[in-house]
Each structure stands twice: as C-alpha cells, then as structure tokens.
Image 1 (spheres, chains in turn purple, cyan):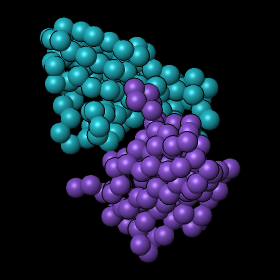
Image 2 (cartoon, each protein chain N blue to C red):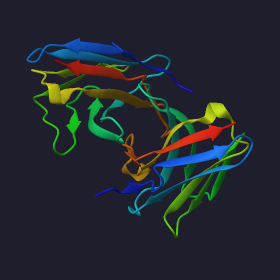
Image 3 (tube, chains in turn purple, red):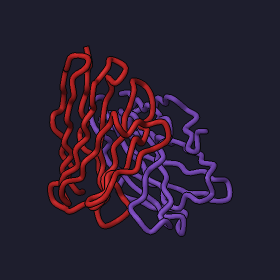
Image 4 (cartoon, rainbow over the protein chains, first blue to last red):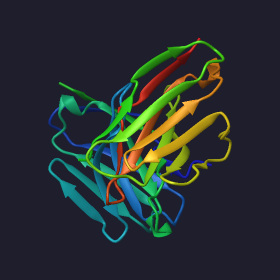
Length: 115
Length: 114
C-alpha cells in the first residue's frame, strides 16, 4: 500500500522555467511533509519542509504548497537550473507520536533541466 | 543542515560473510536513527528504527536476526548484515533527526554480495 505517491516518474523542464513536482498521500495522520533531492549513489539531501498547519513554505527558489483537503503537495522550483537535475522524493511523517518520526517516501520524480 | 556520515561508502563481500555499516551524527546527538534500503530505481524503504539504549524496532518483513542494529551511543548506530547473500545487495542509507522533525541522511553504503 503506497501511502505517498509521486505519479510522474520523470519531468523535463527548460532552464529558467518553473519546475512543478507533485505528490499525493492517503494517510490523513501525516502532518509533516518534506522534499529531498537525490543523486545516484548518494544519500538524500533535505530541501524544504512544511507542517500541516501551513499551506505554503518558501525558501529561495523552492516553494512547497500543501492542500490538506486534497491530500496533495507540490514543490515549485523557479527558475530551474541545470544543477537541479536529480531525483526528487517527497516524504511524510506523523509527528504526533511524540518521538522521532519515521518517514514514508514517495517513489520519486526524476527532473531533468535542459539548456 | 546537520551532518550524518556513513562508513564504508562501498563494500563488496562474499556470500555468507557479515558486513558492518556505521552511521554517525557528526554535530548533534541522536537518540533515534533510521535505516533505509533502496533497490535500483525504487524508493527508500524503511528497515528499522535504531534507539539509543534500547532494542531497535523493525518494519514488517525485515528479519531482525539478519539485520542487527546496535545504537551504541548518542552519535553512533551500526547495522550488521549477517550471513549476507546476493539478494542483500542494495544501497543502505541511515538518517537522524536533529531537534526538529527534519531528518538528515548519510551518504549511503553500496553493498555488493558476490
């Protein structure tokens, strides 16, 4: 049962344009969401996160939007740069357990930013 | 962000041998660390939660006697793959949360079992 889904396995965007990566989840107990960037044979690098009490969080070129009613979040990268080419994973957790929360990952979207 | 290291980055071993992978939080203490596994072109799957001072918690389908976890200190967790077989070949990654709920990942260990 895939609780976090990224339905687009790949995305190609031209340099300078906006990249929009989407993520859907099914578990209504998830209340904290993160985006990670990953290169092959490396660990994921944290990009940005959002708590369920917010609907938007922005950090430089990265903005995450959360729509709780639709159980949907998206990562916007603008402007996109060639160095952004990587696999992007969204992840979700339940922080209400009171202990450090394990992450449930989506299947990833491979972003390619072309010149 | 916080820094998590893993050692070794790559290991090749013969079938039947055991391999130990270390995960360290370099600039913060972590009472909990997580071990993940990633097969090629797949997502990261949580294997177990490593708890300092107590037993690890394993996810369903993960053999605790095969994947031994020891959280020896607030900055070190080890994963030992015992009696490794070729199907254990994978990319193993650890993570640790800093004081927030954000988890920081190590660089990963590529295990190849011949």
